[in-house]
Image 1: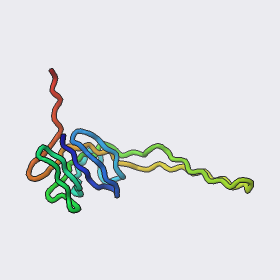
Image 2: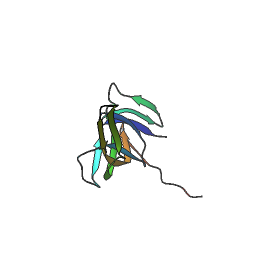
Image 3: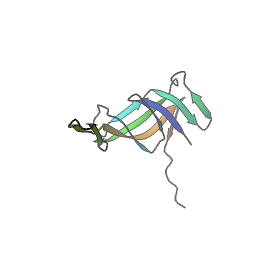
Image 4: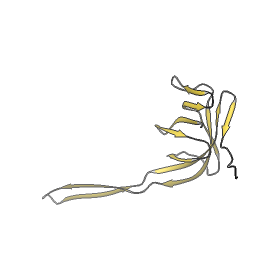
Length: 117
């Protein structure tokens, strides 16, 4: 099993090839490709490589699937007996990325095609 931990949008995300992930909004067009270079850890067949703070020569290739908004979060403020009530909603924008491959040490790890038996 191959995976990497990347930093994007101030958060750390564990990614695997062939899966999609929602990250903070990126200013990219849909169906464009992006290389995530801030790789903190790579686990591959040969072992684990931990960065100090980043893994040298590692990157994650991803494709932008869509942009969207997360479910609404309600913020409600109230002071009892003072007639003070405030209700606000917020929807955080996100970008959905499909991880195509993890490049490390001259090798490219991509999703294994499903074998039918």
